[in-house]
Amino acid sequence: MKQSVFVTLTLIIALAVGFYIWTLLPENLQKGGPLVAVLIALLVMLVSFVIERLITLRKARGSSSVQSFFKKVVDLVRSGEYDGAVAACDKQRGSLANILRAGIERYKQVKGDQQITSDKRVEETQRAIEEANALEVPLLERNLIALSTIASIATMTGLLGTTIGMIRAFSATAGTGGVIDAEQLAVGISEALVNTAGGLLNAIVGIVSYNFFVNKVDSFNYTIDEASYEVIQLVKAKEAGS
Image (cartoon, rainbow, N blue to C red; front, side, top):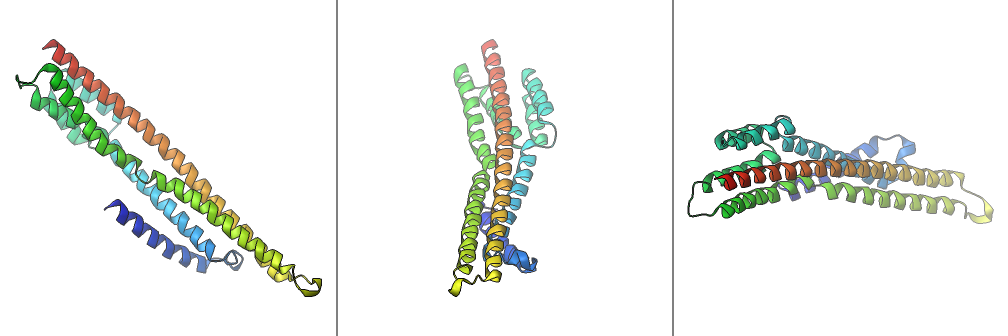
């Protein structure tokens, strides 16, 4: 599914779910006004993006331990078993496997070509790895900006609801003859507090999720860079010894 389609569908479904849940809330929470439904929708979107990120990162790691797979591929490349290394990548799947597979396959294609210099073969292998890396990394970082953006929007939405609630509360104190409308005052304060709580909840979930996934992606990118560098060094060593 295209990213734009996924985001659009998530937004529409989240708004529908948000307003539906809002109608089922206790009366004291419904007093927060329609903005509470928007905050619920934002929370639904956050949960959707978190689930999507968890699934994507799980697929990116592949079918087995990244470290054991990396060690196996390095051993196979070092011993010159390029077909075995490609087969191991096919079995592992995931971002790291796709990147290493592109480099190993490219080296297989050029290593027997005597018209290409040794340095050129290394460059071709490195370029194949870099091109594959450029395709895989954006998939790992997708929707991270959405998490931080939703957290910011939720904070502003909660603040807007708080402001509207306080305006309503102060309006209740402006009755004629100095009489305070206690019911309107209570509604205004309730609206302000409910929206404040909803905005803060979304902000906390969004910021924590964003930092968690950024850390995961950075760690995975480091592993990819380390594995790619090791494979390139092995190719250079083989070319130097040939």
